[in-house]
Length: 414
Image (tube, rainbow, N blue to C red; front, side, top):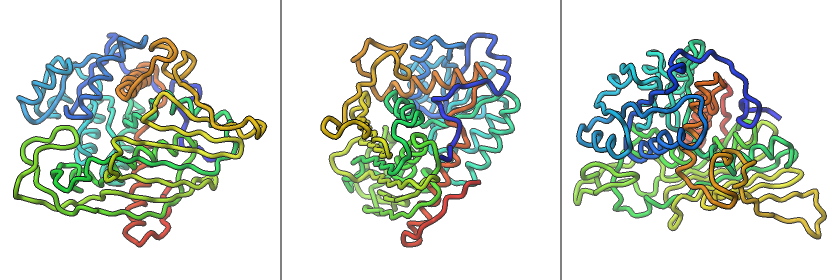
């Protein structure tokens, strides 16, 4: 079976020498962006050191945004010690050793490369960039920085759901045998109303793509992570159902904002994308990403079928896995519910007694824990910028296939 990268479930050994700041016992974090993802990342950094026994403790040194009043308010709300309005000033701060990028995709490459060249570690939200060329430049910067002891990671937070990490362990242990199918869907409905405003997520120059990059990036990464192998080619269709929307009136909040009563603008990204693919081993995969599925709020679902069994996961029941062992007698075999809350399960050693469920926000706590450990202990970054580039190549192949009437399009390996 072709492997996508060294997996998180395998033993980790140090590959770099931790930089000098670790001796001080803290890791100063500077974050760019303070909206939806900024709030989620803040929760992770603020909580990780209070829950897990970390080799160094994250310190919320400074947060950055262009609006002085808004960024000051975000700093006070989320516990940041200082605020900046220029990301270059944030990078230059002596009390910041890691830059956390929670901005729209059009600024990821510039900020990440500048931070790495300045000697900082970097955590960057997904998708890694808006284009393959930008992602490749980011990987080159990350590789150069790694030799200096720096770490560059991408924020695929759903890998950090304990049930997902446990599913990866079961698959890596051979419990499903050779894989046959991977099915993944990510459905939301926040754009069903044609009166929803034209936020930055609907503009190609800022977002790169629509549901494909916003949602599809997650399920592509999860499919490859769980399978332990890469997609080699795709065939796709996509659609923009509402091609004009009211212009945004005032600042956006989360996924939406106020709409202008008259002025309208063009939507330049997809509303939905559906594609099939083939993994390196020959297993088949199917994907659906949409922000137009009425009634679906944040419905991410995965199912993996192998010769020996199957696994299924539903984000709306994120403490559970459904597992079928096909080697059991037919009379008693069937899907069974595994409640992933035991201390033996990934990340659960530091949380609550068995049966006490975790939630969405805990994925960012786990992400912060893993970033800190990776930096302090010189571990391989997982997921790395190279993993983010691989996902970017899949997204680009999907767009190319959709533009060419669903023609099968190979995913470049390098």
